[in-house]
Length: 328
Figure 1: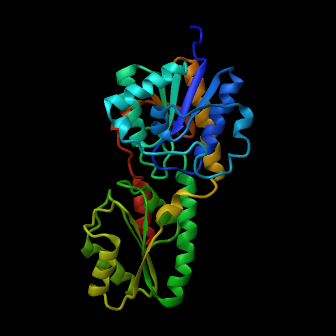
Figure 2 (figure 1 turned 90 degrees about the vertical axis):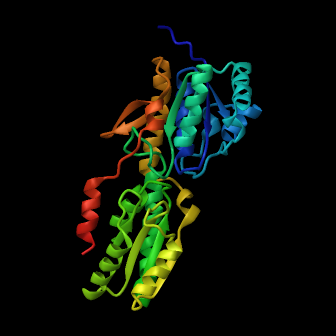
Figure 3 (figure 1 turned 45 degrees about the vertical axis):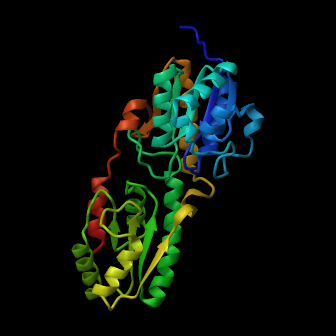
């Protein structure tokens, strides 16, 4: 079948993630390589509604592969959630002769793209870029590895002060309702306990574990807490609870916050982003759409967008076991 893709638009939406610029670079240069005109949409779905389009070329994306954030900006659009807003967006695509749309982001971004495609049948491809790694259909999302490295470096620094003062630190990390960041960084940084939404540790077991650590000679401890943990208390209430029941501990809280989203992407994320960007254009050229680009067993793969939206990523059970063994 003859390729009818002449113009491809792309946007970044939702929370930013290190490596988004590497995705943008790969899309643009892959388009140019295949004689397709790349069109950047600034400010996500909001820019799609407002017609904030820019034609790009290979030189437009020079010097961005190493930069964090997204050079075409991102936003969360309440108007795109309305039929009227999506109609405006579609008319702008028609007015600019756009043949396909690539959306770069997380589950909210993909959900919006899925609804949009159902209404207007515009070919859509999703590229998973979120530090949370909570997308079904891929082992890694763009930005996850960079966030892990940022968090581990922060925990290593906090451990220095924790050991100097014989303190217990509760360190809250991002992840929404997924514990991938907490589990991976907790194991990598040698945390005594890791609290994640997928495993309800319970307050009694936490107290018992911290008592055991104290009795076996540990003078300081690190507890990594996912922001969506279901233990029933926020990280500050958790600290107060532990101090009340274990008065020997002097506890502190560190919420790492948005530092996890920033910074230069790692080599892994730059390569992953480049592979996914090229795969997106290759897929469109093969008349494949309504899919998300993913990676499984270090190979690029395609997952129907509806499955990526409705599916749920799973926590690594082997890593859970390792965290239990390492905490003795």
